[in-house]
Image 1 (cartoon, one colour):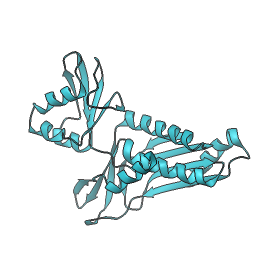
Image 2: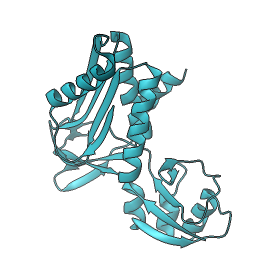
Image 3: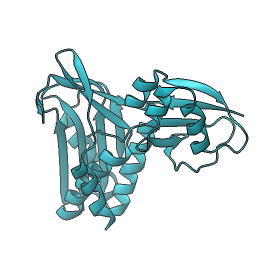
Image 4: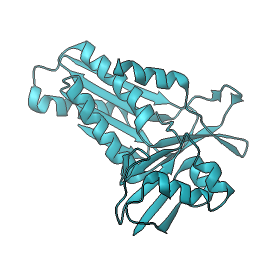
Amino acid sequence: MKITIKTFAQTREITKTPSLELDVEEKATVASVMAKLQERDENWSLALDTSVLTACNHQLCEKDMVLCDGDEVAFFPPVTGG
Amino acid sequence: MFAEIQVHDFSQETLFERLRKDADTNHKGNVGAIVTFTGLVRDNNQSGRIEGIELEHYPEMTQAALEKLVQETSLRFSLRSAGVVHRVGRLLNDEQIVWVGCAAAHRQAAFDGASFLMDMLKQSVPLWKKELNQGESIWVKPKASDDDAALKWLK
C-alpha cells in the first residue's frame, strides 16, 4: 500500500525531504515505517530519534499505530509555538 | 469561537470586539469577564540579542489542532466564548505572535481558560520557532518550564 510521508522543522531540514510517497507492507505501523526510513541513510536515522513526534492524518499518534492505504504520516520535533 | 493561523498582523481591539460579540450572541448579560493574552517577539534569548523569528507550521494539522484546543478549553471552563489567532512566517522583534481571548461568567474561569489555552498550545499545536541573527537561524528548543506548565493541568 502507498502512504505519504511529511516532515517539518528540523526533521525536514535534516532529511532534506519535505514530502515523499512510500510503498509499505499491509498493516505497517508508524514504528515500522520509521525503521524503514532510518535504513535509507544517516540523515533519516538522525532525524527520526526518540524525541520525534508522529501524526497520522493530522492527529498526533502513537508509534504502534497501524496504518492504512493513503494515510499521511508526519514526523516533526516537539512543538515550540506561542 | 474562532481559531486562526495567519501571516499578517492582528488588531487586539478588533479581536476583543469579535470575542465579545460572539459571547453576547447566546449569553448577553451573563458575560462577566474577558481575559486576553498577547504574545510578542522578544529581542533576546539566553545567548544574547536576536533580530526576529520565523514560525513554521503544518497547515492542515495546525488549524485542526487549534480548533480542537479552543473547543476543549471552552468546555473545560464553561466559557461563553474563546478565540485564538497565531501568526506564522517571519516576524521582527516586538511584533505580535499570538492572541488568546476567553470570555466567561466569572473572572477565574476566564483567567484559567486563557492560561490553559496557552499552556496546551505550547504542547500540542504544530508550530516551530526559529530565531534569526546575522544571517543565521537556530531552532528554538522546547523548555522544561513549558512542559511543567502543561502538566499542572493534568493533576
